Image (tube, rainbow over all chains, first blue to last red; front, side, top):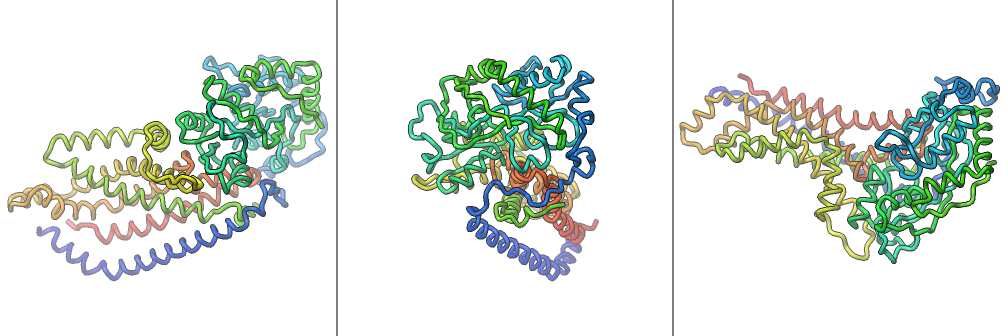
Length: 326
Length: 233
């Protein structure tokens, strides 16, 4: 009692007036936050439809390029191509995905399988590097530009869609494959036949990914969007019925459908074109040309079709006609 | 550096940080309540309560938060069907989904953060001289009275500074809620990095600044309160 009582009275004597100041300040901050949130959300709702996904930046001075001088010059002489130089030395580090069945998947024994892997190997062979000289490196979607800019990989074959924003930072070879955004639903589902039939349904995709945003922009009025960290979580939620469909590129969905046969089906109404390209260092014209030659050769000699049939084929995905390379 | 995404109406930066603030607010209140209960059970005269509290704190605080949050969505909701919001038929389920995910995230954050709150309060209880509790018992107060009248008021005043650290950690931990699709600051950052990959550094700076603006006042204000409220012995 003796110890707590004096300090208690001191507390009562001193606190109220100062507390009031803190409370007033906190209240002001809260009001400002509410006002800010309301203001921006109402303007956001009003004008989202006017902005499109192709919001290409007018000013292109990427933050990273200043530290990488070789990336800025567009007229790189053939001898200065890093990919070709590395290939001459007989060693290439290639970025791929490691978690997409049928495209780029790391097996429990450490080997890699998938169509992207086959393309990467073929390109390496064309550049004169044997399979033993390739080192595969995981390249997650958000890290791909950085890996190329810092020169940590020679090139990237990882379901890498060619877009205008990305072209500002990297060179693209290809396209070597054209995928379409599609919907994966339960095998016994009959009422979902396309994106326009998704009204009142819950759609799942990966956090911040382009397919999720595309659906938000085009069909957001009718569709609820659930975002998870990985497609596996989406597929799991689809299994239990907490989401009604999963969306991303059809060739990726086909791989997941093949993992649990009989449970799911593809709706088969592709509603976009995703041109998969091979990412190289910005300005590496000679390297890009060689990669394009390799892809052309792969399509021409039939290895392209054979590789697709071996990797994506088992999932029941119809092998499309090869893309034309510009 | 190019910051023009700040004025793009496609990205609701204020809204995203407002969700972060709301997550922090509700999770802080919830974990303060649950943490206090856990700490009280820790010193309770009943052995079963002590055992439960000790077991809960030691198990839950050692599970990664990401795992807890994903378990909330994948196990509690998806597998066991626990709904924390009502889905009305015929209406766009987006509102249901947002509320459901938000509440699942708050629940996960409360379950996790309360273990740290409990440990902080327990250390505060230890600062109260045992003679006071003995004296209180001697004049005939029951356990709940000893706790609420004598021990807890002094314990709380001793742990304001450590609780401020827990609150700052909680604010930053709310970013994990993006794993189950709660539209808070980290989810917006992911979206910005996907779309504006050429402005990587700027996106990082804006997000980091947002969190510093949120957490710095917490430390300053609560640090000041802690100094004012400290029990002088």
